[in-house]
Amino acid sequence: MDVPISYYVVLSGLVFSIGLIGVLIRRNIIIILLSVELMLNATNINFVAFSSYLGNLSGQVFVFFALTVAAAEVAVGLAIIIALYRHSSSINIDDFRLLKW
Amino acid sequence: MSIPFADLAIILPELLIVGVACLILVLDPVTPTGKKDYLAWISLGVLAVCALITMEDFGETTVAFSGLVVMDSYAAFWKMLLYLVSGMTILLSMSYLKEEKIELAEYYAFVLLALVGMMVMVSGADLLTIYLGIELMSITLYIMAGLKRYEARSIEASAKYFVLGAFSSGILLYGISLLFGVTGSTRLSEISTVVNGPASEDPLMLLALMLIIVGFGFKVAAVPFHMWTPDVYEGAPTSVTAFMAVASKAASFAAFLRVLLEAFGGVKPNWNLIILAICLITVALGNLVAIVQTNVKRMLAYSSIAHAGYALVGVVVAGWVGVEADVSSRGVSSLMLYLAIYSFMTIGAFAMIAILRKGGLEGEEIEDFTGLAKRHKGGAFLMLVFMISLAGIPPTAGFIGKFYLFMAAVNADLAWLAIFGLVFAAISAFYYLRIVMVMYMREPSAEQEKNTRLVLSPQVSVVLACAVAGVVLLGIFPGPLVSIADLSVLPIK
Image (cartoon, one colour):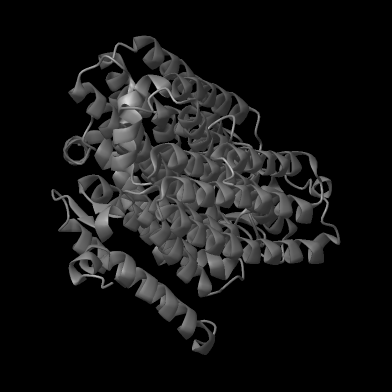
């Protein structure tokens, strides 16, 4: 039995919303990073689902690029977080008030 | 599958710059400290070569890699501007990095890689290439913002930029994925066909359009997506701030406009009112909040938000329904002109902040400029020129830029928008001229007299000379640049 496309869209919408809300309400910068990853993965669900639904491979190609970019982004992001932690021994967003947020 | 050489020739400048950036990364460890300037000169050399190559591309439209990349006059115009801005940034950085003791040659590689990202953005004809360009630019800029690793402010700026940048990329990417679902393609031309036809009222398409506007809104720092700007501009090293304020904004506007006009050009009523609303609040909030700032970099950050708002007037005109095609293209060309002029004056202003030293630190508070005219007549005069240009007072280029934008608005029957812009330009004069007032009319305290000074190097002098020449010459003879911008506009649907 085929799963209808709308299920996938709803799933990716939910995952995206969880990520979005996570970025907005969580204060730990690692959790925020994870939430951003959720948002990106919701996108990948969309691309793959639409790609198979439309019989168009370019969506899957896009996923490869998006995954690579996400990996690069996490590498740089974690490096920044480590540098931040060495300075202030904290990764709580609320502790960074040198610059008015 | 083979890649035809003709396609590679189209992206030759990008390939060259990536090659040199990698070369610099390899040469960096074997170059002794104090000799890193050679790597900066190599970077400047490759920029000059690429400028010559890109110059040839004016007037032609070539599509490469089966529609992923397009090289037209519009892309060529932005690329030339980006080469110029990157070159000025590199020159400005050479002495600044020494003063700040962050003499890292990777810095030049980062500038070049960010430049490649921006070039891919401006010549991307597919949402995939545009997205990759944006990410290459942003990831590089996250690192550059935190380059002063020993300073808490710089790292904090980097972290905030990273969180909000990644967040906005996620939103943009989700918009792209929904659009792919609706239209079955990420190619701008194919999206346009579907969007104009069967999908013109599809709610999923509208949601995708909104998400894409939000994503780009973050990148161009338009209100209400501007909150990262002041923090990042204040915390990042000043040369990086200049680069971000000018180059990344120009490239983001270029890509934003291409996406809106080429993919969504047929459904203008779906987006022009939103852009208009963003434009109004950006101009208003940017200018009003700039008034209360005491840090010059922060003030210039809000001023850059306000300038993004003015540039959005061009987007509004280009997207206005019921105007003739030549009025719409006038909107595009006035935006291009405005951002080119904005680049000169903003780089100049940030260069002045970079060379004003207070003890061993940067003088970035407004009071550090107190009585500067007494000790450095020339320096104070240059700052005066940049400030009146930013405020849009004739005979400087800033006036010409605003004039063409507001004329475009008047031609599109949006005279009230032009008046709105003028009122806020007058308000902006208050905070720009406050710096002038502080420089010329306040007596410095003995301590300020002793500590603050301008540190000039030959390279910075070149940057300042370029910037002031641009501001003054374009203010008096705008003709050539105006006609180049007119010739390089996107075809309006």
